[in-house]
Length: 270
Image 1 (cartoon, rainbow, N blue to C red):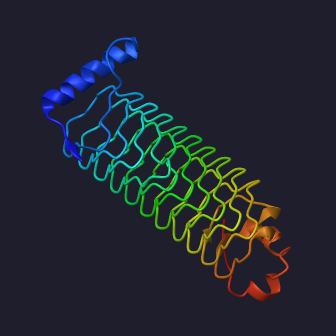
Image 2: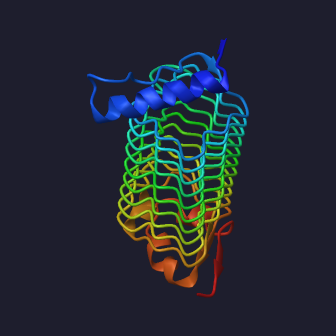
Image 3: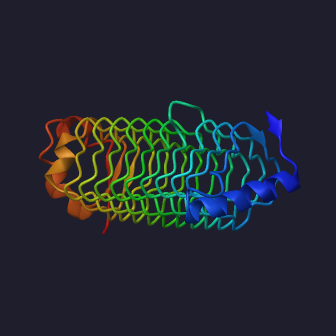
């Protein structure tokens, strides 16, 4: 890792600003494999910059513009990326990216590549993750209150114990995802793909699962009080010890295993 002085950093930022206006002048910022721990980069404009392999632990990137930036292999643990713009940024490219406990509140990550990234215990409250690639990512314990994950790719992702109340997951792909004991209260899962997903012990109170693909999903001990669904509940692999509202009864009795599991299922008033 190479160290960058404040004077060098200022020059790199100035040259990058010129390059953004006219690529015949200035120079694209190359901060790959640099040590920028605790750096104050709040509000910087670094679209298309090369930050691959950089150590940005505890860095302040609040309101930074990192559109289309290369952050593959970067360490952003504990970094403040609140309000940052990471639209179409590359945080994967086959390299491990660490965003453990990072603050991404109100950040724009739409279309970004975050496949395999470690986002455990990070804050993604109100973040824009529309169509973001999060395949195989670790989001365990992540706080995603009111985030927009419409059309996001989360197949094989680990969201165990994550907090996602009010999240928009319309058209999201959650096939084979680990949703163990996740909080999905009042979540919109309309047309979402939950094929073979593990929702053991999850809270789906008042969630909208209409037209969601629930084929092979594991819903044991899940709370479905007030949740919306239909015949798709018949495609679920297991519903034992789950809780449903009274109006779900008309769909539950159509399941082939209803006689076997009905004594374990809890039906509550709407």
